[in-house]
Structures are given as structure tokens and as C-alpha cells.
Amino acid sequence: MRCNYCEWRCDLSAGQAGVCRMYREEQGAVKERFPMQWSACSVSRMESMPFYHAHPDSRTLTIGTYGCNFSCRYCSNAHVARRDPLEFKAEMNGMAPEELIRMALKHGCQNIVFNVNEPAMSLQSLLKLKQNADQAGLPMGCLTNAYTTEESTEILAAIFSFLNIGLKGFSAEFHRNYIGIGSIDPILRNISRLAKIRHIEVTTPVIEGVNDSELGAISEFIAGIDPDIPWHVFRLLPEHEMKSVAYPSIERINQLLQTARKKLSYVYFHNFVGSDWVNTVCPDCGTRVIERFSLGCGGDRMDKFLCKEGNQCPSCGRRIKIHGRPYQTDVKEAT
Ligand code: SF4
Image (cartoon, rainbow, N blue to C red):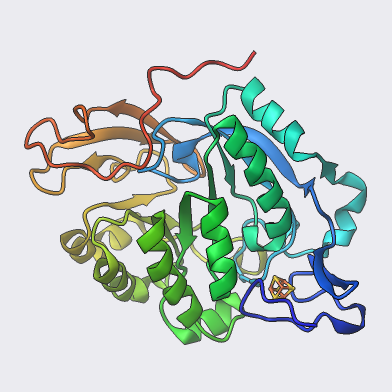
């Protein structure tokens, strides 16, 4: 029997668990090996995911599970994503959807974001959680590599109303040598599809001397779908097998982004302390409309939301792309 959740389409017969090791065949159906078992559950801010144009400054319950369908040589979550999930069995946090929702509400969260590993590894649990999240009025978002089949891309869209998609490079060679997959085509297909039906942002972790030459092609591709899709260029500090690779030069990468800024409305460059490119400026008149600050890795925060009613630029009135609403003024602290 084949698993059709991602483009590996693994054969799960004879007790095999597939590339991600998160599914198995059980009585003629594909089943999760560790349903409702979570590797993480904590409270964070939306900007640190990063989402810059969805539910600004909201408090979010972040969750994750185990396993991944990619083998990124520089993975910063390898301790969870690359090991056999069975190794974690004793320390897994089993929580029913009701418990997760209770926790989200108790801590004043306005939404839930799946952000540790790939959500396609746990689609059945996430579908169940979605039902409870809907009842509680909590939208769900995720970070995904979008290496899903067409069918499961629709499942992702049914669960998540906002998605940050990792487009890690643009060449087949990069994806073969650094990610461990044979083709980028399904990812590009799914980005195009999800952009039509959901709020998406795109993130590209840039590695000095490895994928920086592909930034131009990536920005062309995004602009071809919709120039208003926010693009996060993430200064990657490589981990796992690539710890010895030098950190990207801020000045050089920023220089490479100049052309992209002419094609795309919202280009961000972050993951280092004090980045000036984490603010949103109006694409028409250049007025600063959302101010943020960056504390480095995963530490971005919103400071001021300066748009007028209807998310309009206060100077020229252009509508700034925002999914949901800003929460800055009504966040309740956890008790
Ligand atoms: S989700 Fe996992 S088991 Fe299913 S096809 Fe992808 S890698 Fe294979």
C-alpha cells in the first residue's frame, strides 16, 4: 500500500514506515504511528515564526510533532526531524485536541501555528485538532516545505488558513544535493495552488556560497504568482552536517536583494540582531507602515502597527496586505 501524503509516495507494505517514519499501513489504511503525540507546545509571537502579514502581533500556541520527509544537510531541527521518532517514544507529550485548545485559551493565544517539523507528517492528528480549533474560534497556520501531493495539499489548505512555505532553492541540483529530493516541481506547483486559496508567505534560508545564486530566480517565480506575497530571506546559520560553513555576509546578501525589491512588494531579510529589513514599508510611497525589531534567531517582534483603518498606508492610502487583524492593543497576558 502506498502513502500519498507527500511526493515520496512510500510503499508501506510489509510493515515499512516510509521515509518520514511517521506512517504505517494498518488494516488496509495509512495510519499515523504516533497520533496526538507532540514534540513541542509553547506560546510565542506571530512575527517570530515568521509571519509578518498574518494576525500581526498575535499570541500563538506553537506545536510540532516528529519526523520529516526532507534530509536537509543544514537542518536546525535535526534533533527532532532527522531521528527515528521511535527514539522519542518515552518523552512524547500525548495531548488530545481538547487539551491543546484549553492550553491555547488559558494562555491567551489567538491562533495555533504548527512550526517545528513538517505538518504533512501528522495530517490525521491535525485534521482532528482543526475541528476543535474551529469551535474555539482559533485559526490555524503552519510552516511547510510543500512537498505534498496534490491531494494532501488540499488537506493542508483545509486545515491551515495561513502558511509560510519554505522555498529553499530553485535548482534541481540544490534540492538533490542539500535537501535529498529529486524534483522541485511539486513544491512550485503547490505554492502556486496555495497562493490562490490561502494566505501564504515564503521563506528562503540563504546559505553562503550554496543557494545565494538562486535568490534571483526565486524572486522571479514569486513575483510571477503575485508580487504581494511576502518573502522572507532568512540568514541561515547552518547546523547538522554543515556546522562548519561560514555565516552569510549581511552586506552581500542584502546587495543581492536589491533587484528582488523592485519586483516584490514585501522583501524581508532577517535572522540577525538589529536587522533594518524587518519593517514593512508601503510599496507605493515608501512610508514605514509596520515597525518590528529583530533579536536574531526566531526573536522577531512587532513594535508599531501604523496602518490606518482597513490596513491602509497612512500617507498614500495604499492597502497593505494583511491576513487577519493586528492584536497589539488587546493581547491578554497569560495567567
Ligand atoms: S508522508 Fe511519509 S510515509 Fe507518506 S509518502 Fe511522505 S515520506 Fe512517505
